[in-house]
Length: 167
Image (cartoon, rainbow, N blue to C red; front, side):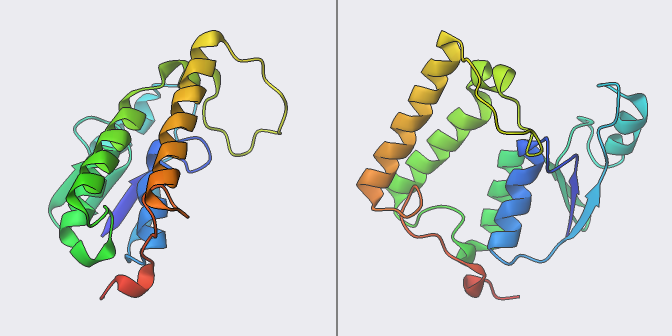
């Protein structure tokens, strides 16, 4: 399998499947297509189009199968590696995990706009708008509730490691 990424420092979308595959010991090759400047760079779009008709990254390539969009990649991997534990075993917890993942994937526009991902950014205080503060409060409530009900140390309890993957 090959994971085509945009940038792990500035794209949480690219980082998510990369972290999951690394944490669960799923072997893959990595190809980075830098975003470049300016945004919407035609060279980037042409390179991305080789893997995704949406011209966006990340994309997982598994033989002749191309899977783009972060959540679709995670679902594909969950089906391909059922022992990996991508989702909680309990059906109710698994549904909740999928709902929260979808909410996080599609929501929190104010937070994304004011605090875009930048792992290289120096730490400094930011003044957040009311909308962003509301987004942060929602995240805190979601995560605190999951940790409390499922006992941690992760949102839905234990998280399987690469020991669960059979290559």
